[in-house]
Length: 363
Ligand code: IPM
Ligand code: MG
Image 1 (tube, rainbow, N blue to C red):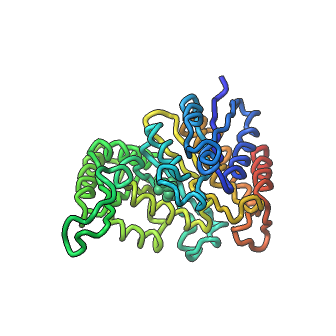
Image 2 (cartoon, rainbow, N blue to C red):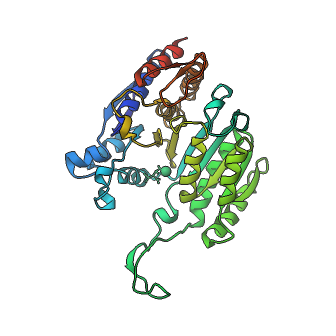
Image 3 (spheres, rainbow, N blue to C red):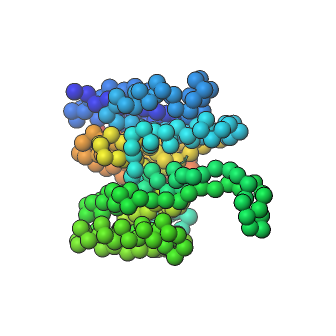
């Protein structure tokens, strides 16, 4: 039975990078991999066509799919709309629909690319970090939230915005297990990140992660404050194995970590729940300024396709094949426009990068 893959290209460079991922997936046909593709509308383009950033028709496709590959959404032209109608809301709706609660971002810096990092090359060379971010709770969904008049204090009567940070113990437990399980396949170290010196939510987080750790005596656990984590990340990034954290801190840490590669388009992301069906995505923005110029880097999106094969389609062999092809492409000197190129390298367009990966797959 062919796998059913839904592609959600979105806008900006989304369609260009998804096209390259699809090209790479097509090239896997000789390895006993068949898929049926369909495409759904999300984001600003969907809003323009149907008045919704996540139309019901797209949700239907996603419900029937085995795996979902997401491009990018976001366009400031829609910033004046109600929050629930903005392009970004599509991603929140998809996470909710599929019950996705774990966000995995795998950030690696191979030696030959360490020169691209904003940090000194010797600081990042060999970096291999997995960020496990809780994706469903925290201030993202906590109630109550809203606008009101400040009830008291020196600013009483002012307009006030408020959100609720919260986690139930079961929510912490299930994502903690994802991080501990993943670290077992890696170097066996989990750093759990919170702000328990200030926040009640974090106090509970720390307690529950400690309890879960008792079931993993082979994994070492450290607790770090969020501010300290960012300092460590920009000074000693190679020290980390798995970072486990909540939704808001994870949003910041995952982007900071991927930036250490020198391009936010290098690390792919997987959003997972209890079933194999997740959503894999490049995890960067729409880069509207370069859309249509052939300068977008498709690597994160191709890596997302590899994550999809690994987590949703039970084809770890093919995921590894793609990762090896990407390593080969870099070793052969192929770079995209935003990666400053040195001697022995060649800057190629989005689709030439896809072609190069396909070539490496076959070799
Ligand atoms: C991400 C994004 C989203 C988030 C936005 C677009 C809602 O920043 O996937 O990290 O904050 O989760
Ligand atoms: Mg983010």
